[in-house]
Image (cartoon, rainbow over all chains, first blue to last red; front, side, top):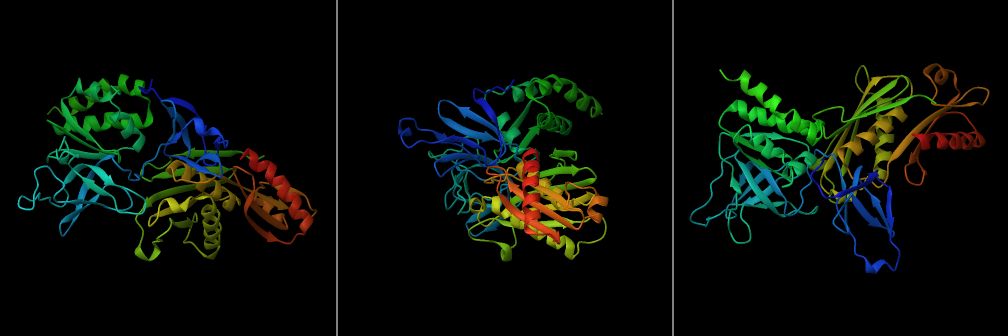
Length: 241
Length: 193
């Protein structure tokens, strides 16, 4: 069972009519999430997937996408690719690299600059993300605190997963990451762009965690949880020497 | 009607892919994007679409370029291109097995691949091929032998919402009456597709 309160309505394909708005429907406000478009007084789907309803009036289409399209306020894991004056260019998996100012870190000032090396991994939040502009990242919240964001420590392991898997394991109601934690102690950072950073004591443990999470691509949560301990044990036994 | 088979997410590394077959024709389509494109291809107001058709053997020729052009034209009508300015989508179509219905299978495969990649589209689309024999009988989704003996081959692409024709491609000689007859026949078949 998916640990979600959102109700699945039905499967939609692009162009499917979701609902027709009548002119006097001002009484009920409906919010359209990703995958839905309003045109000519009709709401039509633009992506294939499950039409879901969250709360009272938020509708969206849940898809199995692999390519990330930047959205504002989403947390992402990026790789530093270039230094350009006082900004860094960061690859977040979208079609354009995101920018981050060297001042957008906790306790950074013009005198105490944050130095990033090429290839460093950065966990941050998207401040600007619209289709017409380059995305901009920050590693601080509005109170100038890092709250876990910033450069990720070395010795970890980065891999990519489809976006719907990333979204599902981030969900605080999802017990999967806690289930792994019963076997291995580790730290994990999951970006909305499908990049996952894992750090554990041993390399074999990190590989085991990667394979455990990749189980979710093909199977549902229940099956993945039941085969979890077997999978992790097989990895750890092989690499014990 | 010929047997249709489709498989989504066939390739693990592309953003979206689909394997589609009608009888003996098998086509694999894969989509990459929305991703970065060359500056020369970059459009300030929309998505750049690049279609590449590679045949089973040898390198692509003028015949393949025609197919690419038809597919590009078809997809452009269904894509919501304005949602991803300065980005590009690459669609690679690989012919796996040829049974004569290359064009319609490629179009159906690319539609499924685009669905799998989660690219925003205004509608889905489906293609149907039929042929006219020398005694004016219309065969829908003919076999390779039937294609060779026919005097005209017609392919129609319909959109998934209103069932309107968005692309046609014809080869051979026929009159207006026959065209309309084939069109009606294809339309009923396309609903199933």
